[in-house]
Amino acid sequence: GAVVSQHPSWVICKSGTSVKIECRSLDFQATTMFWYRQFPKQSLMLMATSNEGSKATYEQGVEKDKFLINHASLTLSTLTVTSAHPEDSSFYICSAPWPGTAYGYTFGSGTRLTVV
Amino acid sequence: AQSVTQLGSHVSVSEGALVLLRCNYSSSVPPYLFWYVQYPNQGLQLLLKYTSAATLVKGINGFEAEFKKSETSFHLTKPSAHMSDAAEYFCAVSDGTGTASKLTFGTGTRLQVTL
Image (tube, rainbow over all chains, first blue to last red; front, side):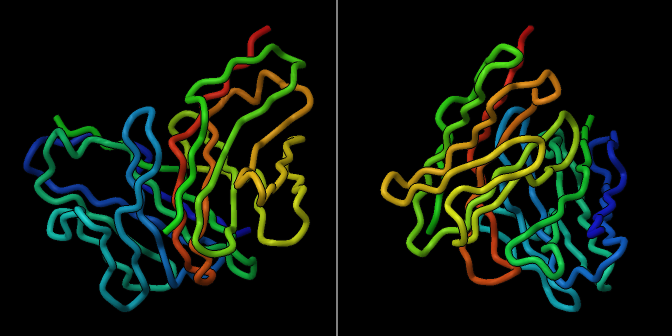
């Protein structure tokens, strides 16, 4: 149980285009979703926290106009990388608090974004 | 604020040997500590977590970790490495503000298992 489905698993896009990444909670309601970015051979850096029905909270240094986060329902949170550039190429992972478990988190399988 | 430090970005062990991955934490509040494993191009899978109960925590796949407050450590061990254990391992600490509290990750340790 407590599965977060993340799509797409990989995407290649041209510079200047936008890409949307979706995370769906399949068997539970995710009121909160965390979005991370991971550079090759590096750790996960928290980008933002989204809460259903309200604006996302971005970490310091993260451009909210470039990384648009929407959490319109209890089962869907999306991250849109707008006007993508090669430096946005990275591995993006979402995570939701595990329901009914203290301090547990379930992670999506990640999205490898390559901007060419 | 909280942080974790993982000593050794790369650890290599022989199959059947002891696995020891080091993690030290810093936290201004009682910490909640986690170990996650990541296989290439995949998300993270929880190995185990410490949430102020027993200091010796047993996880999946034969892994365990011991919380030592005096040493601010939460090292991950496994008595006998298996080839399938080769992966990236992340130690993480929670700010403990609730079920939606944030995780801060260490820089990761890549475990290599050789024959």
